[in-house]
Image (cartoon, rainbow, N blue to C red; front, side):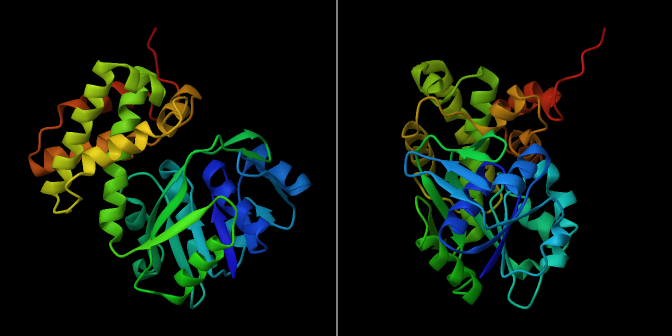
Length: 309
């Protein structure tokens, strides 16, 4: 099974590294100094569950260099997804499938404009991982769990789940309802991203503050109300599940949105709180907390804000 990882940063690098460690044929699409380090010295993983150093991987910044593959795991962030997806047709052969692991609910529609949507399995991942230095992926621990649409027992997807089963510290569970899956993550991710980014607090700081915790609950309530209005049937205890999930994570862990804002990078706020805000307006659902979060964070969406003299 040949697997392409599109966006081999923290999340993608960890997945690709673990698959390569398990002996799978992996191609990593990355960029900059990180790519150069992988090309010269392989990819390293530093983890409480076992370190790894893999050198037998293809590493490139051009999707077209990879060639047709069996599986494409797409971990590039939403601001860069449209540009990346233009080249996805070069990866396709008869059995090729695509797995989305982006935040938000728009990845399938973006990719589906370039390849047959029936090839796309929506997925979510719960994993804290980042580039600690070029060529090295660091993870502090916590969950290593993916949930991915099995596409009704599709053979390529079954091979993917089997391959993940052979890896160290990485799990993948097939699900039947991809829309419900990504909406469940969206509700939680948009809300935790908003509260951490507005307060500039990690998870432990949010839950140490009664006021910040209350804001998180309000953000979750709004996102759930929007999902109901959109016709998505989430679990009855969606809010409680999301709260428990984030309380169980290391207190120092933050959201990727806050990390990107603090690093001065373009970020995904348009696909998180702005999406809740815009859907709320479209569906007639009040979203004052997410609308305020979008207004407060919008100046940072493309990197450092513009400041007039």
